[in-house]
Length: 145
Image (tube, rainbow, N blue to C red; front, side):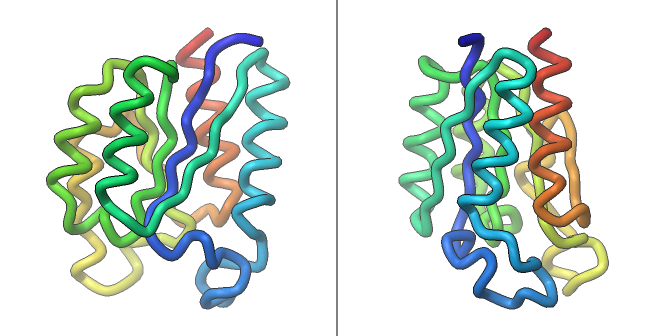
């Protein structure tokens, strides 16, 4: 197998498919993992999915990625708008980073319009539902070759 792509998910995404389906849809995090693994596998790569409701655990995953992953796809969820610490961790990672949001954060509350993570991301995908993850993995695969 080729390189590993980390798929990192922030708070409340463990409830995907159950929480506010009118905003986030009916697909689950397991569905996200399946589609990402399929797209990565078609391109000779693997994925490792991680979700946490705790900022420090997400930072720990980013730090592990420095040694274990070639790229990161991250949906930091609410930490998008608040976490300089996640931005700092991402700035220590040398591979490509794609930021994903299931909903279009720019059509939501004003506080959601700012993303600290975007300051590091090589690309941002928002408003494409869980398909945004597949788009992100496709883009990562093209960057990795």
